[in-house]
Amino acid sequence: MGLRTLGQYHAALRDGRVIYWDGEEIADVTTHPKFKVPLEVAARDFDYENPARRDLLTYRDEDGEVANRIYQVPRTEEDLQARVALSRGLSIVGAVSSVYMALLSVKDRLAAVNPEFAANIERLWKYARDYDLRAAEVITDAKGDRSRKAHEQDDKDLYVRIVERRKDGIVVRGAKLHITAAALVDELVVMPTKAMRQDEADYALAFSIPVATPGVKIINRSFAEPNLNAFDYPASAHHSIPEGFVIFDDVFVPWDRVFLAGESQLAGAFAQALGLWERTGGVIDALEKAELFVGLGSLVVEQQGKERDAVVQNAIAELVCYAKTIEMGLDYALRHFEKTPSGMIHPNILAINTTKYYFAANYHQMIRILQDLGGGLTLTLPKEADLRHPVAGAYLRKYLHSKPGIDVETRMRVFNLIRDMTADTYGGWSQVVALQAGGGLVAQRIMMNRTYDMAAARAKALRAAGVVT
Ligand SMILES: Cc1cc2nc3c(=O)[nH]c(=O)nc-3n(C[C@H](O)[C@H](O)[C@H](O)COP(=O)(O)OP(=O)(O)OC[C@H]3O[C@@H](n4cnc5c(N)ncnc54)[C@H](O)[C@@H]3O)c2cc1C
Image 1 (cartoon, rainbow, N blue to C red):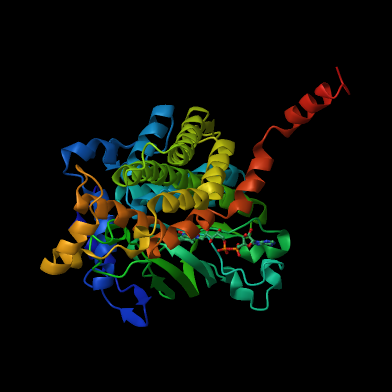
Image 2 (tube, rainbow, N blue to C red; image 1 turned 180 degrees about the horizontal axis):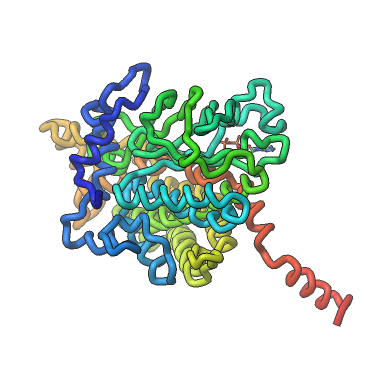
């Protein structure tokens, strides 16, 4: 109990979990080369002995013990700010473990309908906190034909559902797709992907189980091959994490691990709560990327001698506007936080949805700007091995010279980062992630319309139109 060492985390991953990747069944994720970089990513959050990070990574929990801050329930604006500061350096494995914040934000509403399920949330959050566990956000169903409801699909398992209710628990079947880091966590926290109607009650389902529970199988893929050269792939050599199809093949879930089992009126609340915390993480990550884009744009034009050009200055200003607007949206969301009845505070829902939407809807345009500034070298720059070759390297140094004071190797690294982030596998992955992760654009549009003070806006318009005084 208490903070885990990296060794203890790895030992916990050797629990007989069923993992597939690229046609291979992987018996031990901790020794397989495909998981080398993902495990290095996850290791960042176990840096507890580092005095520079310890205060940010940990807090004193409600029982006086030192715990990982991902489990801290924000009760003040400072707590929320600390959470954001933590998130800026957190691995994606730590970031998705924030799923407990989503559960805790619906706990009060759930308590009014089923106090035992609400108590399960409280107990499993404490359990995860006390044992320093990692958990995945397991939400998105396969969904089949989007125009039909869950129970109307050709195959009833296209949304995860209850197939049997027993005295000691439920048996569930189905699959959740695209689940970030599923193979590298301890717990799978499963929630409905959308609101469910009464006739979809078997799909109004939420629970948490260990990854090695019998019947759970995870099929993985990642944007990055193992062993990428960090000079040529400065982002994806370090950032890779697998997403997985998580299959529930008649999995037994005991009642004390169930949060929702047919209470269809609450399915939407779970989905929305997760959306808020997931999008908050998305906005924090967006800010990191947007700030990098400004830096890369500024560097690449300087290296090419274009920094005085008015058109180029306009383009850089667009990148600055993008980064600053995201930063201000995040800041507003934190300052105008909202509170649940039991005193947990969370970022402003409208502000987070607006900012996530702005980020996602404009992301491809920012990439266009950066690629336009970079020119063809964004794609055709030879690799590090050629730079180190005595003959080829000499030519590269000669023909990649632009002006005094610009180092060729630095120039190559800047181009490599632009390509890796925008034009290579990781770049393509990031473009889809901007649009889809945390819910597609439509999910944010729905939330913006639902939370904006429409009555005030309508009254204002009626006054301005002279209809009312
Ligand atoms: C890299 C990555 C990581 C992810 N990680 C996670 C994770 O950790 N956990 C998790 O649960 N999910 C995760 N997701 C899933 C993500 O939340 C979904 O991809 C997203 O919500 C969109 O759902 P979908 O993929 O099923 O697409 P769809 O729902 O099919 O959406 C595709 C398009 O169809 C439209 N559409 C959908 N339904 C309808 C309809 N009824 N009528 C008209 N148009 C419709 C949408 O608006 C959208 O434009 C991840 C996704 C990616 C790409």
